[in-house]
Image (cartoon, rainbow, N blue to C red):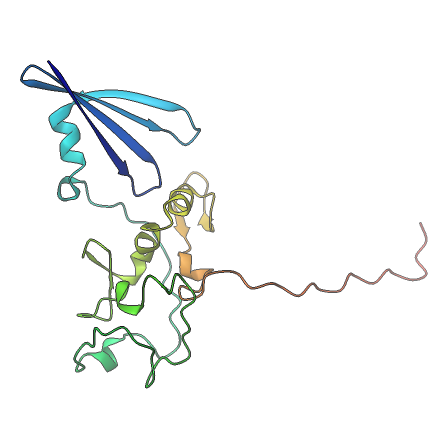
Length: 203
């Protein structure tokens, strides 16, 4: 008798992995299928127990961190705890009326608000959907929860900007060095006038 169970997982870097577990007698054999960066289908056989461990977030290896410059905080705004340390967190979704009134959320505002990303218990940190607390220097992990394809491309250097050596140390700009996290879409740019043609030049 054979029993087949199919598991789906959207990995952090935007790749869909499908694992099919086939029970033959008391043992479980596992076959994992996924597409690599080139679009090629990869099929790997693994012990089912090993595969099931990787699908449990608690058993995954720690997320790789990347060398980044300091986040571009607004002047005089960080650390947030300078003001928030003695404030009782207000978890009610609302529009800001006393402070931060200049921030207009234009980023899936129908589904989320400030405290979906900012940690209400420590305003100097961010919070992932899993509840894990991360520093602002790892904000790319927060963005990557929804923008998995962009996170994948950023990690390998085809989205965003990296500086350094092609075969040595590199530094990655954070998402927020280019995108306003509250309103990330780039605004249209006004074209500059064309250069003036030189007069009196001979060819």
